[in-house]
Length: 462
Image 1 (cartoon, rainbow, N blue to C red):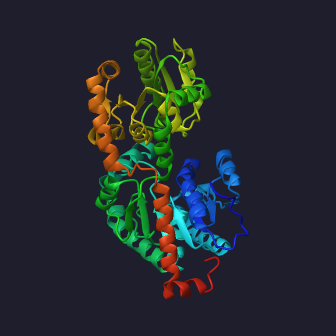
Image 2: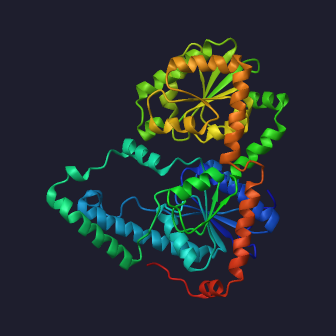
């Protein structure tokens, strides 16, 4: 990790902007460590949500003080903020507030570069734009497995309700809509609040984009991301997975099982859940039916036990029924996923980023989509897993993977191909991202125009 980073260090920091949930900070921490250990560069982390105990502890161990800003959900009173005209006024007000907070943060920290997880988030847009204007390098890091944008749009239809179609609007509104939209965009342009964004992760104005692998570079280009230098660096959190893969043995697996109170003498099937209730893609009844079916299939295997690892956005109360199953199913709310996956014998999920971790750790994987959820078919086309759509299929494939060595070997070859296409899995992702940042910082320092931009008095407020 290197020595603790003091706010009294002579060099100005690299500013990392962490968004909710805290898991996004995991993508930053290895880079922060490499910047300090290899390049003697200090870092500062800015949160625009309230960080949890884990984030606070990790940063305290590194001697990094927290900086927090708060974006208001609404600036107008609730009834006005949700009315048609009030909604527009409220949005402009929140844009104004985000721009002011961004400028103040850059004034406060005087960074040499800015790193964000998603440069299309509201505060990040303005921080990145202002940093660009000051001649600072700006980098967006892909923090997790990303679907095609069309899939996120479909998920939003479930989660937030379908938008009103043009045909359902009254004729006068359909006639005036293009005019009012044009006027609104013009007003945003005059106020300096408009952004030409690609509707995707990494579709904002940051100049550099660190992606997990070549397949993601191709995906973002297809989605319309332009004007960035896109580098397939690998993912910083995958470095820990790579190290775990090199060191795992029977003794390590036994130690991990003891840590999570897992039996030493049984075949463990680990089910990593998805936030189906939060995304509103499934009912609680369907969720329980699926877990019961998975548990029954696993319990039907000799010496086989199911363990459920909850997604961070899920409520353990929704899985309380697991304690009443026969046999009871253990539910884990927090864990180091590389360790937990490595200690288990078979992995089950739907479309989580953890599926990619299981491929890296060479675990046989079953992906499930029992309820025709669109994004749960993601890995069917990618490969590397056995994909099932019914409870009966799940039981059949579970038996086949655990009994048929030829089927397991074929799946292993597919996993290796997916890992090669979608990642740079060699333990050096954080090194590459840190090097990319330092190179950009050094280049900016050599550019006269950049030096002039940074020496200009910054604007505070609006």
